[in-house]
Amino acid sequence: MHPQVRSFLDALAAQGRPGWETIPPAEGRALFASFRAVFGEGPELHRVEDRTIAGHVPVRVYWPTSGAELPVVIYYHGGGWVLGNLDTHDSLCRHLAKQAKCVVVAVDYRLAPDAKFPAAFDDCFDATAYVSQHAEEFNVDPSRLVVAGDSAGGNLAAAVAIRAAEVGLPAIRSQVLIYPVVEPQFETESYLAHSEGFGLTRRTMMWFWEQYLGHEDHTASPYAVPSRATNHSELPPAHVITAEYDVLLTEGESYAARLQAAGVPTTIRRYDGMIHGFVHFSGVFDVGKQAVSDLAEHLREVFEL
Picture 1 (spheres, rainbow, N blue to C red):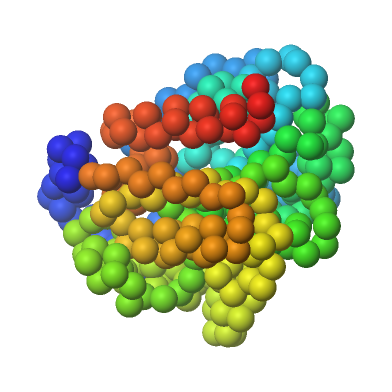
Picture 2: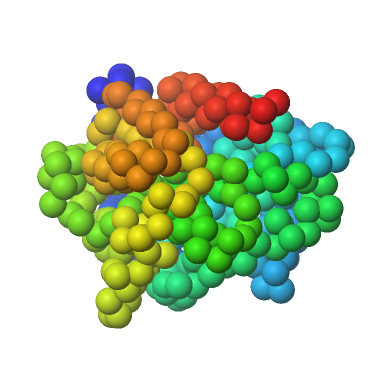
């Protein structure tokens, strides 16, 4: 385990912070949003603007330059579909926009349990379709559109790619899945090996799924459980990032292997010594900063810059 991760986990243990599943969602959101030092600071950009698109979806748009027809990343934040907002992922989106030389559109989708599945998925798909169909409004090139997200946002990115392939739009150049939530299977090797003591716990993930799905059984839907899709062979190329000490390690790498088996060009990048959230927590993890730079380099290759 990386020494910065060990220090971080020791500090968490010393604080005795309650699990997300033990406090009301509103309280958890406020607590999560207070971790500004963990998220780090993002660079200044040419322009950053909050707006509402597709009639109802709040987004934050990041322009690194004044150039026209830039590539674009549609970004869906993590937080178990319960936590997170535009501010919690502002630093990460700023770094991606600057380093990958692209416009980033961050989606502020509706959160569970107030809005259960498929609310978050619908918001993400609607926002992505809108950007693709109104490319001139954002000064972007719709042929170089990538969907990306971390954790629950990785789930949403995978789901949007599945839906887009089914209906034939929007055209997605690639999907970037950062330690994605793929399916509610809690007996995998990594769930059992890292169930407690590594930040994100097995118990918390079970609770997140309960908040998102509610009392209805949506597990047959590929928009909730991407591994259930029947059109994997039709999906865009994927780049999957995982962390060694993460309960989601097994499902993320298994999904990447499933895509590869279906003939989808897929790269897998595991960061050893890291825990869930390390990319987003680049304010405290040097490897997180490097991972963002690595991802930006990958995106520049995807965009052929």
